[in-house]
Image (tube, rainbow, N blue to C red; front, side, top):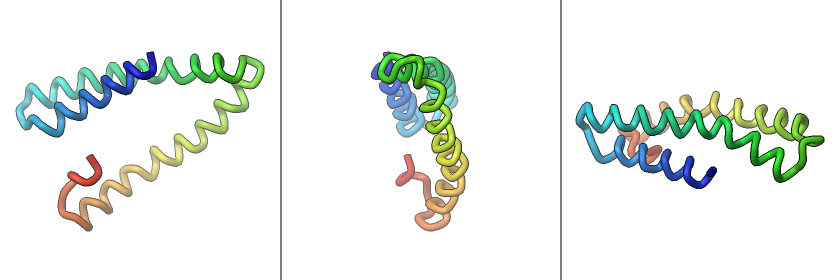
Length: 92
């Protein structure tokens, strides 16, 4: 399930990178949004399966700290890459 979710996200990124039409952007939004929503459900399932439900709370909370930090720094990093290289190609 997780492999499929990440594969869908990769396919969505290809639509965004290759196409410049409104259709490709729309396909990106729909596919990436659905895959991102499915990822929200896949992460807890994998954590509980791999580490057990008794350790789920602690492991999940530590992961969320780092995920939140990464999600906070990513837009700033993307802006820096754009300022330095003049495009978002390297980031994508």
